[in-house]
Structure formats: C-alpha cells, structure tokens
Image (cartoon, one colour):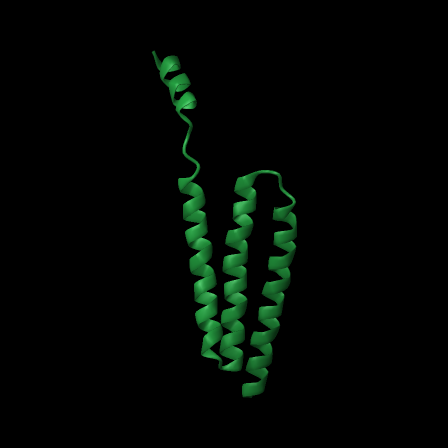
Amino acid sequence: MAATMADFLIGTALFISAVTALGLYRVLRARIAVERMMAVQLLGTGGGAALLLLGVASGVSAANDAALLLMLFATFSCAAFTLGLETTPTENLGSEEESR
C-alpha cells in the first residue's frame, strides 16, 4: 500500500513538472519583462511543489528544504523586480504638468 502512494506522489510530481515546463516555454517566449518575471514565479511554485512531492515520496528531508528555498528565492526575486520598476523623474514631471 505504501508503494502505491509513493508511485502516485511521483506521478503527480512528474505531471506538475511537465505542466510547469509547458508554461515556462510559453512565458519565456514573451518580450515583456513582467511576463518573464512570471516565469520565475512559475518555476518557483511549480518546481517547489514537485520537489516537495518527491521529498515526501522518497522520505528525503533535504528535498523539502531545497523546495522551500526555491520558493523563497522566487518570492525575493519578484519583490526585487517590483521595487526596480519605479518611474523615472521625467515621467513624474510629465504627470505633474498634466494635472495643473
């Protein structure tokens, strides 16, 4: 009975990996930087979920730690990307002049 649960978890992890790979292929072909950032988020969540499932199926706790770190790095990179999207001073001047 335990072997069937491990097989199910491994199959689910492979399915999540395949769907993540298809999504990454589509998103990485985009020309907009925001859509590429979504690829990083997709890799962090999909890859982390697959690693968590494989860690539970195999009983290796290092896979769980690696999955959580992958998700954490994806979150930090998204936050850093968002902070870097500040407007330039010339754009701010244009919007102030229009409001007068």
